[in-house]
Length: 458
Ligand SMILES: Nc1ncnc2c1ncn2[C@@H]1O[C@H](COP(=O)(O)OP(=O)(O)OP(=O)(O)O)[C@@H](O)[C@H]1O
Ligand SMILES: [Mg+2]
Image 1: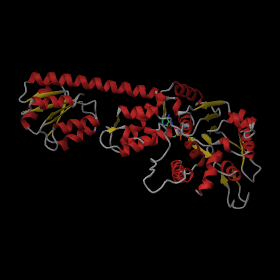
Image 2 (image 1 turned 180 degrees about the vertical axis):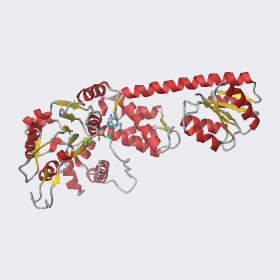
Image 3 (image 1 turned 90 degrees about the horizontal axis):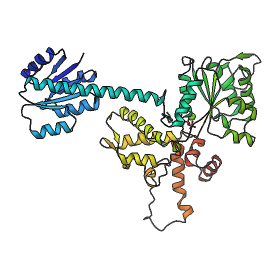
Image 4 (image 1 turned 90 degrees about the vertical axis):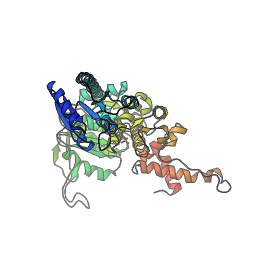
């Protein structure tokens, strides 16, 4: 049933509108001030608001703004006994569906109401279409309009139901972990656990007990039996991240599990069958790692059954804007500013940046902009300076080089401070993960380790 809210302090006016509109079969609610008006609006099922310009508690224009930010598809018709032409023009410009002078002729009201309701129905329809479109452009929480992402969505949908091992490759921050989760969420295993293990973070012996479990007394410190992640993931999915940096001995063990689907707890000879879907990820070029002998060839073939390569963000420009808008909606809502939007200059800046930290970096940039921006628009000035100036999007704050302070230092010495700040910032950005930090900084891991030692950063 079509629902109309009358927000007017004048009881006569409320009465007239009620008599007129209930004849037409509309459901009518009448309130006399702003706070009362906000309650029914909050439910989101009001189709049309008829509102007096002089509404106590904020005024009709204020209510118009509220409606537009809360429920843009709800139409608003403003009423006024003293309305001037300027008021009418201002109201229409702000998006009111109509403006009626009081006292109003019944016909006039009915025409305005019909027209406004038509407009609101059209807007709802558009909104529904947009949501349906959004569904095609996302897979679970993974958003992507780029044709390569669409192809990935297709692959994921095709293999989600099977127990096939899936290998996800791609640079840091391209969405490998997110995709692994989507794969699980779309499978029949979704009720069972999704268990994540970072294989690059643990020394080999610990990793082994972490994955396969151990029995009491298997090694010093093994004071009780421990269930491993493979068993914990029973019926579900185990996600082995950073597989490219695992040790050769671990690779042999993993190969056995993948071949035979059985595990042995450390210190035990009993074999335990496991029904687990294995998804692996790496930001390394595994083929290259095989060539140089860092990764076992037989394991590579075993895990490379279905492989998905996440393209770097710089190679999918159409996704930059889609993702930026996606993150903006999320963070703006989180920070209670649902009407925030990007200025055209901000979009241009985002599109021009090279995004070495990929989607993770874009996500951080948008959150930072939401927090820093004043008003309803995120402008280019709300984006990190590196993004604007050099078109180079390194992490962290701008570098203030104060060249007014005394005579210049030799260049090499002068660069030590900024270099340390950039590295420390990158590490902070990645929660201390050196591999990720090196990626963000565009240097390889050993260069980063060398610099950490040289600068005494721990
Ligand atoms: N297509 C996408 N749609 C929405 N959010 C995304 C997308 N890709 C990545 N993200 C978000 O970006 C961030 C980084 O993604 P994720 O952690 O999956 O990357 P990753 O490739 O696993 O990185 P790493 O190699 O560092 O582990 C996450 O917050 C994730 O939610
Ligand atoms: Mg990851």
